[in-house]
Length: 248
Image 1 (cartoon, rainbow, N blue to C red):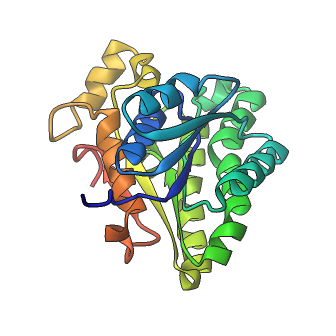
Image 2 (image 1 turned 30 degrees about the horizontal axis):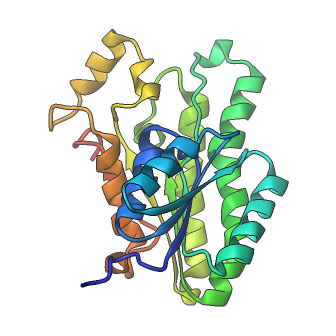
């Protein structure tokens, strides 16, 4: 029996309780990875249990990505129990939309802290074991909004554009140690977050998609799994668009 492509790999996925993060966790596990599915409180428990029920390997961990001490403690615990960390997927994100003239500073700070600064904290924490292993895959989940902008989302767009710059700079820093750093940029994906958008706004966005439909969380997860695999070993500093042609 052939080994699964990610067998013996340990993956941490942030924001794994629902939507894109949950699909990423499930697909990594289906390819053989042991997945540490994280979210606040016990919100990732169902995602981990579903993976185990399907025959995969997963565990849930409580994590607030905006608390660096918690991130460091999680990574230390995973290293203590599993001895390695091969894949980090920084997926946790929030949106607090408002026109800039009306945007509260607290909403700006919350989005930047969760979407961008947390990716820094998580990557910094996993880099030490990855450097010792001389192998690793760091994947950030950015957005088409970080590439093309969107009214009412200056905070979200800034955080996601920042992730692209972060990804490319870090890729240059760690490439010599066989660690790749890439980003996936989803477009309009059918999740709870996008379902909160008004029908009018969703229709306007869908009209910009040449493939004529929103994407699914599994579309994004497949792209993440590719970048996490050995097949993508010569790809780093790349932004993989999963947007149906919405932005080219």
